[in-house]
Amino acid sequence: MGLGLTHSEEASILCFPSRPAARAIPAPRRLHLSPPQLAGGEYAALSATLDSGWIAPAGPAIPAFEEAVAAASGFAHVAAVSSGTAALHLGYRLLGIERGDTVWCSTLTFVATAAPAAQMGAQLRFLDVSPESWTLDPELLRDAMADAARRNRLPRAVVPVDLYGQCSDLAAITEICGHWGVPVLSDSAEALGATHRGQGAGRGARMAVFSFNGNKIVTAGGGGALASDDPALIARARHLATQAKEAAAHYQHETTGYSYGLSSILAAIGRVQLGALADRVAARRAVFARYVEALAGVPGLHFMPEPLWGRSTRWLTALQIDPAGFGADREAVRRALEEAGIESRPVWKPLHMQPAFRGSRFTGTGVAATLFERGLCLPSGAMSEAEQDRVVAVILDCAHRAGRA
Ligand SMILES: *Cc1c(COP(=O)(O)O)cnc(C)c1O
Image (cartoon, rainbow, N blue to C red; front, side):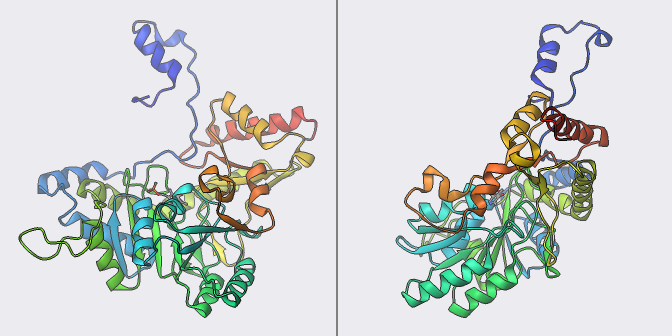
């Protein structure tokens, strides 16, 4: 796959190098959900970084990247780290999470949101999402907090998750948590470039996490960031991320940290990519709008809503397929897309339904479970209109065969 070809293309190159290209019917390119996309300028940034001699997780590319993340997110202070998951781990550590502590977390998310807390020995309680935004339901949180306060069982942290480019309702969430003195760590890994009530993703939380993994809207090839308006927290994060070395010539450690530093090479790429963020948001929103337009009027299809208080990046176009209206279920559509060489994915399986988190508590009514059962994410990255039409055609074909459209 190294050449970015399909298996059959690769096989034909490897086995029949002299076959005339004109005779082969070119297989359409496999469409992926969110492939990495170059912004232009990466090569120049890379060679400048290599020429500078700063390759390690130190040197001028790191603060330059951190400043670019701060500018893009609206946070005052940012620590660059090796992944979003590492940033989450640091966030939990800075909040003082210890064995037996309780952490509340949105259930509709990727495993990385909760994995570090579970590995630290925390008890997880997963909360359902709101149908309005598919993110943590503030009304559910309000009731659960009041109830927990009555029983003297407040959580040590609440972790809302920004989903598929859409912010959670952080103003409501931080108001509720602030009332009870519970800190909020926002997993904004999927939502850099999105806003809620005019503020950047994660703003208002004590700390927020961003990811620059290869599938995110902008990428460093791998990397993450922990952001906060509190300079002491971010200074401490940097200290812990680089093995908690004290200022001494001999290696002196008052505590143990992690090897979570970001390579300068990746930071240089990430900084160039951040320059393209606004364009990426516009492009992803345009892809979403085209899907909505092309599939308008097909019964049983419901796109992920965008609440009035937020502006999503539409990192991934997600929709629900109601089998009663559409005539086929999500899996039938996903398999048909797969057969046409198109990657699509079910909406995250809620973490309270994951065997890895058996024994955790769940509070909710089943909104996330229904979204998992019916939800599908479609290719949403760099795509030509003709390629997007391929996706649409398969979905319309499923509807036709079901006799609904
Ligand atoms: C991508 C992602 C992460 C993890 O980021 P990495 O950089 O891949 O470690 C965490 N949470 C969510 C919701 C994500 O989508």
